[in-house]
Every structure is written in C-alpha cells, then in structure tokens.
Image 1 (tube, rainbow, N blue to C red):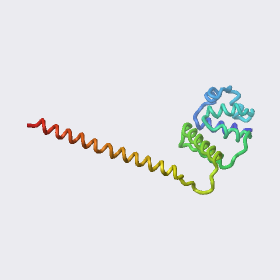
Image 2 (cartoon, rainbow, N blue to C red; image 1 turned 180 degrees about the vertical axis):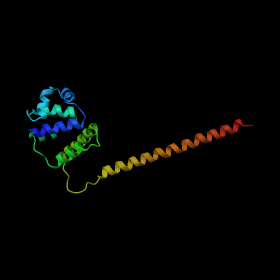
Image 3 (spheres, rainbow, N blue to C red; image 1 turned 90 degrees about the vertical axis):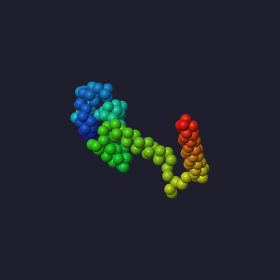
Image 4 (tube, rainbow, N blue to C red; image 1 turned 60 degrees about the vertical axis):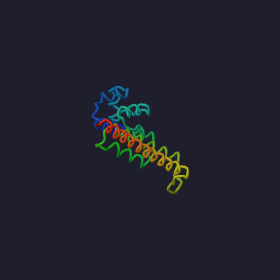
Amino acid sequence: MSSVGDYIREQREHAQVSLRQLATSAGVSNPYLSQIERGLKKPSAEILQQIAKGLRISAETLYVRAGFLEDRGATSDVVGAILADQALDDRHKRVLLDIYESFRAERAANPPTGGRSRPTQKATAKKAAAKRATAKKATAKKPSAKKSATTTTSTSRRTQP
C-alpha cells in the first residue's frame, strides 16, 4: 500500500508541487492526501485518477502500483521510463504517454498480418496522381511569371524615348 503513496510523493516532488497544491487540484483534502502518501490510507480508483490528473501522469501507472491492475510488463517499462525522464516536463510526458497508448490501442485493434505491408495499387496510383498534379501546378505557374516579366519589359521599352 505504501508503494503507491511513495510513488505519488516522488512524482509530486519531481513536479515541484506542494501537498496542498496537489490536494486542491485533485479535489481531496490535505490530510487525506498526506495519509495516502504515508501509506496509511488506500485510495479508491477514482481518487487515484484525480491524483493522476493533478500530477499529469498516467492513471494506469497508479492503478498498477495500487494493485488495481496487473503489471503489463513492457508497457510499464516504457511508461516508467517516460515518467522517470527528468529532461521532460509534465506536458511532454503526458503527450508521449498519450501517443504511446494510442499506438498500442491501434495495434491491438489492427494486429500485424505477418509481413511488411505494401501499398495497394490504388494507394500507389493516388500518390502518382498527386505528384503529377503538383508538378502540373508548378509548371503552370512558371509560364505566367515569364509572361508578366515580358509584358513589363515591353511596356518599359515603350515609355522610354
């Protein structure tokens, strides 16, 4: 039980947030948060989620430390490494964790088929068409620039005696 409290205290100190500030942002009382940090009280999942929001860390990490979720091995290593990196601020950590979780969710929804995926003929054709359109636009702009330069040159010749 003190494991989650110790972790919360570490994260709070790393974020340079006082006990009172975290209690206010998490919506819990100062004494209750202090008791959680000291291992005297076991917080509910809802309270852990509020504390995680206040610390701007993953609620999943707190759930694992509190024993609500099983440790998923590599995920915890990645999450732990991101959270432990002192070169990152809280916002960067949250963004990295969000991206990591979205990739994991996407992979879970669409497992790999075994080999390296190749673009379909339709996708290849679309890319080729887009390249042609871009090239066409670029060449279409060049002659019009030359015309205006020619017009300016011929106009300037007329005005000179």
